[in-house]
Amino acid sequence: MTELEVLERSRPADLDDLRRRADWVRQRTIQLIDGAGLGHYSSTFSCAEILAVLYYHTLRLRPGQPDWPDRDRFLLGKGHVAVGLWPILADLGCFPAEWLDRFGTLGSPLNDHPNMRTAPGVDFSSGSLGHNLSVGVGMGLAARLQARDFRTFVLTGDGELQEGQVWEAVMAASHYELGNVVAIVDANGFSGGGPTSQAMNIEPIAARFEAFGWLTAEVDGHDVAALVDVLDELPAPESGVPTCIVARTRKGRGVAMMEQAPQAWHLGLLTPEQRDAALREISERLR
Image 1 (spheres, rainbow, N blue to C red):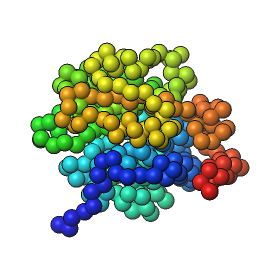
Image 2: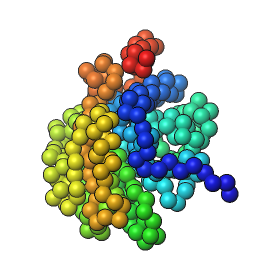
Image 3: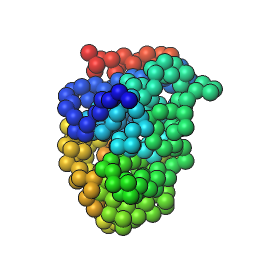
């Protein structure tokens, strides 16, 4: 077999390029949702910088071989933002870019939530919230049993933390001393039903993870420099303490009308006029 390129951890990445990558994710999200007539805008926009830094700087990957055993795993707990992941996986060569044209259509491998059986580069399916951190703990245990040094990253929403299964996983990860497990909380303050604190308060997030024996850090989730720094400082995968990064974000970040009414754009469809205005706003930053 021909040796394929490995994208090593903490590989060089220009911070301005990472910022532009995040806005490119927003741009492509609008275009993909417009073509399919379905999708989640504001929840995707809140984690655009997180996705950009992970895939273009942090994760150890072999894009041409998305099932490479030594890759770092990435689990999308908030699976409804898969539309922001698809352009990245296509750009990295996990599947042909032409697949994006079929997003959300009947029989397409790329849909509103990730399916590990149809989309190369997806490490676990998600839809129902709350189970991916438990799966990530299982993957961390598997790495230990196989004597492999991959990390497992799990991106959750803050509303997702209201699920009891999440806290069972938090407890298990510290009990089994899984320093190869990293939880990133996209803490944008909203869940599908409204402000997270009104449905079931989960603050203070970092202190709660610390109480279960995790290392924690809290950062501005739209500050790519801060994200790079905290991810570069993760303990070695063989360490005995899991890490939680609380990324404080804004739902709808990057499009003014969505930042002003984040819940209204959790799930919806822009009119042609709104679409063009949003794309112009993003394009101004990409110049």
